[in-house]
Image 1 (cartoon, rainbow, N blue to C red):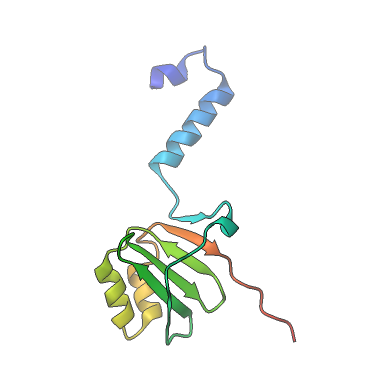
Image 2 (tube, one colour):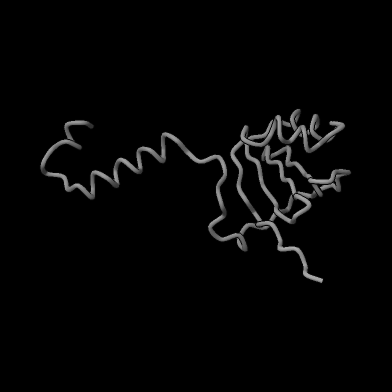
Length: 121
């Protein structure tokens, strides 16, 4: 690849685009935004949580997908989450702490909905 990228026959712009693509494949981002949030409709039932930071959570055993709705209205979908992680999360005394230590940053995430602006009074 070095000889191809270093050759004079390839334009500088094309070399840059190839390197950006290689970098993106080698170092994927952990949080992805849905390109069309309106097209992603969750069919995963979520249960209310007794937490000051997290509002609801749900899990698909078939797809190994966990969804968490935060109290600010944001909803994230976490991919390839083992069922035991969801069970441990639901039985944790502090769900927010369990989320911070065991889920956030450990699984690929997709933002389904952004945080809602607080209503002005």
